[in-house]
Image 1 (cartoon, rainbow, N blue to C red):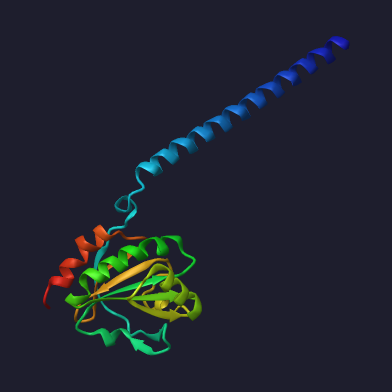
Image 2 (image 1 turned 180 degrees about the vertical axis):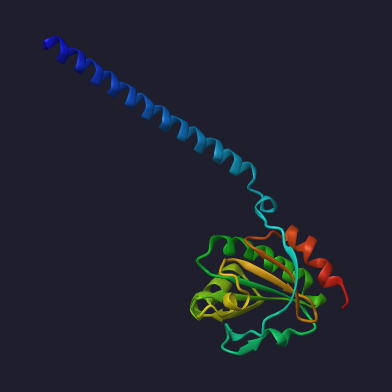
Length: 196
């Protein structure tokens, strides 16, 4: 009987060692994966590699009317004759924050060509948006959307999501996610430079 107990105890000890070794190997593999993943992310950290590519679409822009950050009611139709980039975003959204400098640079480079941006803040207060625009040095149009009207109008609840309207109010490009200055130049500039 003692022999049986001794044998059983040895098997339990071996099983325990095997389990511990397995867990240690699993953890080591996971750590190695994280290290390798981190080096891949570091190599791909330029803005172009994170950028989305716009999709060509064709539909009439929704009749959308909201208050701007200054309290004045504006409508998308007020920008008729201009190429308009509508950007649905929020102050708490990391990719939204990340793309704002690219949007500002693009706006500054093309505003004299009849291009504008209407950035529609999903759920943020006027004070939050004002603080955000000041801290980032943003000069384009900002609207407040406390109830998600823009997200519903464009049927896309993801942030950031953007749409480019041609001078006639037809949506020509759409994308969801952070975009780079390079992608804006490549895809939006031909619309800005075209005469409808």
